[in-house]
Length: 192
Ligand SMILES: CC(C)(COP(=O)(O)OP(=O)(O)OC[C@H]1O[C@@H](n2cnc3c(N)ncnc32)[C@H](O)[C@@H]1OP(=O)(O)O)[C@@H](O)C(=O)NCCC(=O)NCCS
Image (tube, rainbow, N blue to C red; front, side, top):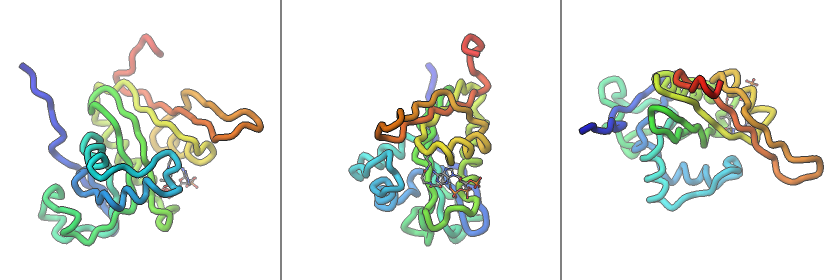
């Protein structure tokens, strides 16, 4: 009988007064739902609280927070709850993944007041660090409609490349979509 490896240990990165944690329990649902409901997330809507919690629990989450929690050097981050810290959610990304062969990156954002300081690049580098620890990964994917900015952003930071573009035809409504891919170490030879 084989057992499934669960995501039990969480990762943390710190930089200045910010930290990133993969612990979904730290994500304040109401704050994230406010982001999902905002114009920033043109691709999503808010979710019922229990559904959002389930979504996060089933994803590999990267919550970015302002100000490290007290005692962060001595307490495992998983033991800290958002309510017990002064931390504020300022960014987020999540991967829908089996943690081995496939990964889809979505819901990437940095608080508009904090953008342009390198935090988005740091967030994506942390995601990339975790992806690079998956030796059986075939590919990572993402969709974006923000052509001019997002395509070079993910090309530069993750080595992603555009797999397919569906730009709206002249005069057509909508922003279209670019599907970006990064091949993993187990990308099948037959598809090369
Ligand atoms: C994308 C995003 C997370 C970048 O965060 P950030 O903290 O501003 O990123 P950094 O400061 O590290 O880097 C800024 C770079 O992000 C790029 N960028 C990528 N996608 C962008 C977007 N949708 N909107 C604005 N800037 C974006 C900028 O062009 C800039 O590039 P430059 O440094 O070469 O000028 C942030 O702009 C954001 O939350 N945008 C709104 C949500 C969104 O569009 N998410 C991505 C959808 S794929």
